[in-house]
Length: 135
Ligand code: SF4
Ligand SMILES: [Zn+2]
Image (cartoon, rainbow, N blue to C red):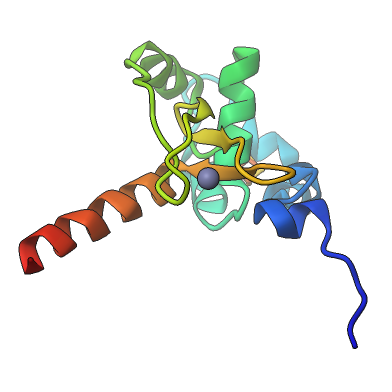
């Protein structure tokens, strides 16, 4: 019998410390802090393939990070996102009110809760739409 307990990251489907999975750690960090007039495209392409993009972007939004590319967005793009409304949301799996946002939320269901990303919410909304269309 397998008696290995799941880690927090496995239970929440997200790493306990997202920095451990940061793809930028394997590249040139300066790429993520381009000087004025320098392109941010190369950094954004790395972010697009990074599995902790939501965690990174939420972290930068929470801290009001003023410089660099975080979670695939430049400082200006993060400012625009931070000004958007962040309406109350519910977990598609448990119906519980979610905390956080606008790109990463926490659902309090279960002993440790779990993370919900904007992509999770979009997928759930699309699935609900398909179910309604099929009914
Ligand atoms: S999203 Fe981009 S900046 Fe954030 S950890 Fe991943 S590669 Fe680094
Ligand atoms: Zn939930």
